[in-house]
Length: 247
Image (cartoon, rainbow, N blue to C red; front, side, top):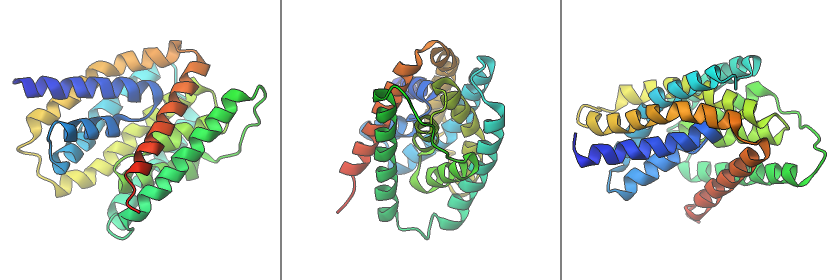
């Protein structure tokens, strides 16, 4: 294994620590890091989608082991997310203009960040009614057509509606495995990974190594700190998307 392999493993480890603990940002960290190291867009996309099958599976087991999962919510989010992901990947990925997707996702992320910060600043919080099935479908759909988005959409929405941070992030993180598998099935059918397996394996192994730590961190992390970190990352992703919009 060369030096490049260990660089990709380190990227996968860091990305999974953030994603497994806070329920988001694996895709954007891995893809942006790989592109910065000179990888092609095809390789970056292949690495993210392939690695997420393994990393989200390991993270799901970690969250289940540490008791971070609301099982009733998990079933509804997973089922709806799989349907939304397949719908986005097979039906609309070639029909919906990508220049329209980014502004919509950006506006949503900025709105969720504002709602979470509002929760932090107010002593009494009025829970917002936000059904799990439409939320899961939207998260899976946006993840498929936007190359990522399950965590920022689903986890931040659960927090914004007033759910407990630990259960929200753990449940969203566990459900993401099934969404990743559904979306990646399309990826496997259309892209040849034969020449990329070694570098993709580095990202996978780094992510798997980090997954157990992520489940433990969210269990012991103070809820207020978890919310601050989530809101900051969602805000950062929203700003990152905004600066990349072509007006």
